[in-house]
Image (tube, rainbow, N blue to C red; front, side, top):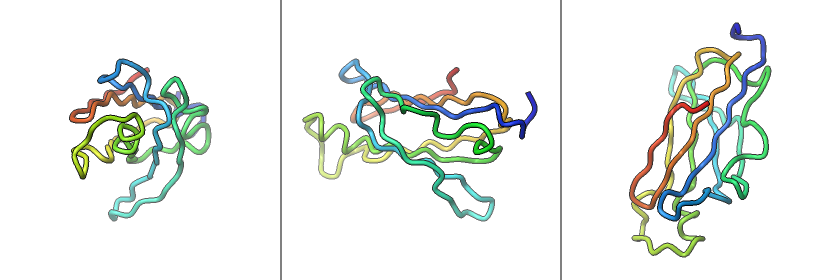
Length: 124
């Protein structure tokens, strides 16, 4: 598919690897990053009971090629789950910077979290 045709979408989900369950109720924000260092907030969401967002963060003509940053509020999530954390927590917000090269593709950015570690990858 060619970029600019608008068929692509951006999705995410969160897995709590400490508890072995989806990361439900996690607030997240998506910013588009400019070449000059600026940023524009393009989406905000909260994960559902399955650790996913109810709709794509970006889809169709709203998904454009460029650099992005997803920020997940994991400190608040673990605190709400009753996990004993340091003050301030070791991981409070987890930012993931990535690029979209072809707006016609599906980009899936999963996050696997624990209070002291995280990982991500380009999913399908």
